[in-house]
Structure formats: structure tokens, C-alpha cells
Length: 237
Ligand code: GLN
Image: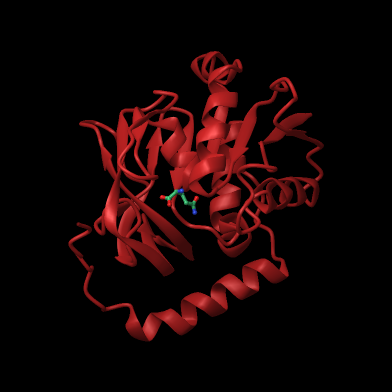
């Protein structure tokens, strides 16, 4: 039995990111893998799980979510090997600090060496990221610009949109995965759901064909005439 938990969907729930946990659970169940799906709301204790999901959120709820998680055992669990999949505000919270509202710097959970400052423009629109052989597609809406510390690996290279800084998106650090893409991103990119599932299980998963897979293939087909577009290195300042 694999236990997964959505963290604070009441605070980090913009754009339906809680759907990421539902997608992972449904793709696991379709393969006969039993899944327990839990949820932690702001007054709850952190449940024990192998994989935690964190979504995006507006600046105020993001700071509150960071406080709630700082007071929880999330850091200890991650250090013990629990996996995390985080989107946007969730990504920023995992880092050293973020300053998204005014110029205040807010201390993050410090589980990964990244830092987020406020850019002068907000990035709103479609995002496309090259992750190995795959395209990751989604939607972004954030004011933060994130810098990865030395040795922190990005999830992929931005082909369209901003992601962290106009060059790369997200990170993979130890057992943590993060991206700026909403969607929910695992619904729009079933290959990523399967890669995450296989990593958490520690074994390959059988291929699966679902409507989501067909939609993803169709999106890639539509994007492919543009696949030679230049990697955009926008100035995020
Ligand atoms: N509040 C953060 C920002 O604007 C994150 C936004 C989000 O999660 N969509 O950068």
C-alpha cells in the first residue's frame, strides 16, 4: 500500500493542484497498485506518507502554509526519505527564503538550496519545459523568480514562459520534485505522473493508455510544428 498526502489544499489549492494527488492515485489504481490518499488541512497533524503534494497559492496563504509546515514534522520526514512533489508556491516554500509580497523576505523550510525574490513582472500564461526527452506543458502564474543554489538540478529547460528564471524550471533535489507548472501538471503530463510513481515505488510501472495520455500526445503534436522555436532566455527582472 502506497500512502500519499495532499498538504494544505485549503491554503495551497489555486488552479486545482490538489488534482495531482488524484491523478497519481488513479494511475496507480489502474495498474492494481493500492493507494491510500490522505489530506492535511491547516489544523491537522502531518500524516505519515511516502509522498507529499504541495500546490500553488497566493502570497498570504503561502506564508501561512509555510508557518504551518515549519511547525510540522515535514522536514524530518523528508530527511528520512519521504518524497515531495511541489508546484509554484509549494516550490518556493521548500527553499531558503522567498519574498513575494512587498519586499519582505520570508524564511522558507530550507529543505533545498533555492531562493525566490519578487520579479518586476508577473509571469502568467502557458509554459513549456523540456525535461529529458519529454515536453512538460502547463500554465504558470507567479511573481517570484527563483535561483537554484550550486549543485541543485533544475527539472528542465524552459522553452516557453518563465519557470524559475526564464531559463530553467523547477528542481529535482534528493526526494523532492518541483515545477512552476499548474494544470494540474500531472493531469496534463501523464508521463511525469508515471515517472514520479515509478520513483516512489522503486520499480518500473506498466505503460498505460488513458484519455489523458491521448490528450498529451495531441498537445505535443500541435506543439511540434513549433518545436524548433528558440529557447527563450527572457530577462526576468
Ligand atoms: N505567490 C507566489 C508568487 O506569486 C506563488 C504563486 C502561485 O503559486 N501560483 O510567486
